[in-house]
Image (cartoon, rainbow over all chains, first blue to last red; front, side, top):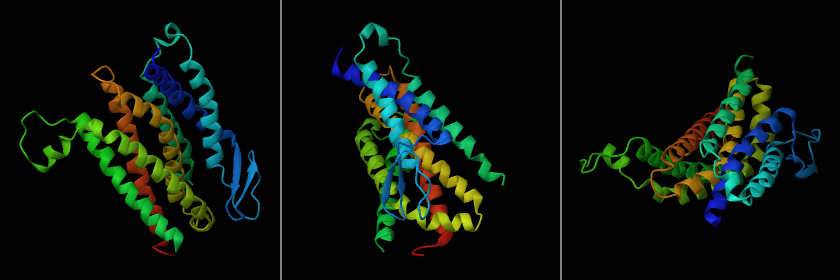
Length: 112
Length: 155
């Protein structure tokens, strides 16, 4: 398998896993770390707010990137016959679904 | 003062990104006819889509990075005011902006890869990835302006 083909498999799997983990991470707060902007401090995992608001967004993205990196790298090094039929359509269909779900989950702010 | 400067730079980079990705989306979905005239709209559609890819990726990363820095200040200033004023609709709009920006970041490797593939095999994939990034960038640009305008410049 060529390096370009490997990167293609990596990119498809990453594009699929990352948004799924991101949506789950935002819903159940699976932040890898928390940033406390008022104090300029970081905490491992999802922390309670300290002297001001806590920011989980960076932690959600880090969790998603790490969780997507492992299967994406693994898939990139699988034999060609195992990944040949991986549909490229998933690279946009799953992020599209994630964007719709993310927007739908935020509708609660428009009906208050 | 520093945050105001960074916010302006963030806005300028967002304008550049908006232009690049909109040009690309227009050229992908509505390509100019061969030998088309020289109207503004036809020239807008007639760009070489592929030439925008690296610029879109770099501008997206740079704009998101700067946005992330500004976001820390937003969280302890504007966001607190928005919550205290119970402005839930702008609050919700910004939450969607945050999620679209993050999901867009996850699409960038695929976007970059499929634009480097020759031929028409992945034309639909390229078009859809470009469209999703375009939607995310437009949403984030407009919402950023709306939320910024709530408290006004320099407040």
